[in-house]
Length: 441
Image (tube, rainbow, N blue to C red; front, side, top):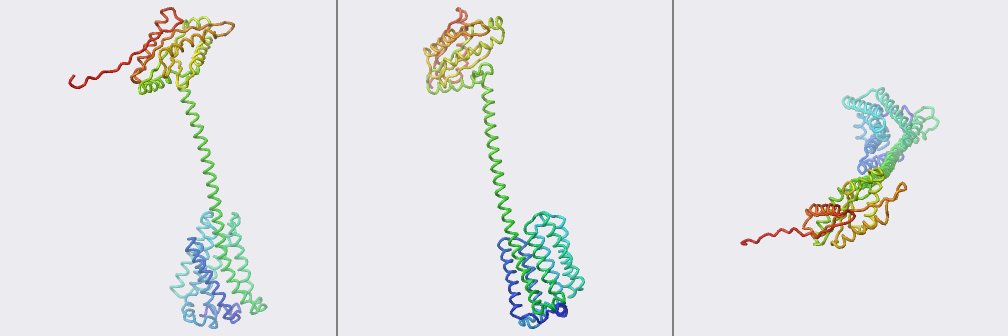
């Protein structure tokens, strides 16, 4: 007990407190320690655990350093605890170092300061171990460690203040108020002036420190919660923005794919479907016609004397003639399910869904008539384009009939050319239905 009593006599505070006043202070500090423990258990924030440890040890030290007039029923505890007073002081300072480290968020933002504070903490652990083993520790060692902890935590607080960390203001403010009150009461001249009020101020400063530490820890958690909420909102906005961007990119990609698909199926000169589109559509149309047992018509259209147009007027006019032919087909074939396509060179094909031979012949006549009524006007010339057309109709068995129908229509084109051009020839196709003999026949 010599060390504890010397502390009181040095400050001149021995016998100045009433038992009731001191009991209230210690009880309040213990209550704050319990609150920190409960918050640690609920929130799992390490800062509350360190704060609770610091407050429990602080209350323990206050009990140890008073005379027998206080807490007389704790005399045995005080007598035994006095042997561990140096270790308790070191433990309180070490716990405060870790509480400050956690409170200021040093680990996440100031790794160098964090490593230094870990060093200070383990130094306290080593001093505490020596004190427990020998039941003594030089006052100079305790004072030196206290100064080291004080300087370290204040520097850490200043560093976080420069970082703009809001809880750092509470931390530094707590230290300034507490140290100011304790400094006033520990100066002998001030103790003589204040008298009994010095003891009240000293114990009140300990209670104030405990209260501010608890409030600071709660405030830090509140700040962290706001930061988490802000981060979550920012993340949701970023995800939403990115999602919108990806959806827009997906839309653009889909449009690009559709444009590429359309380009791959379109003749660049005339704007009609190309041979690839014809091959794909013909199989589908013939397959549907076979399944529905409906007729389909195929027309092969070839321009007469097209080479003369190129030779006499040039290839540019020849291109205009092909565009003019495509326009004629578009004007005369309007149903959505029908197809007009440029097969190659000056040869075009027409596919007519659910159309018999008479209907196909009528379309062939209309195309020829339109071209005669609308000659190609270019460079002061009026060019009338005539056609040789082969027309076939029938009920296909399957999509394999596409090649057979096309070959027959193409042959009819040559028949038309050999018979003077500017005409169409047609044929009703007969289905090639394979007959399968029944067993025994």
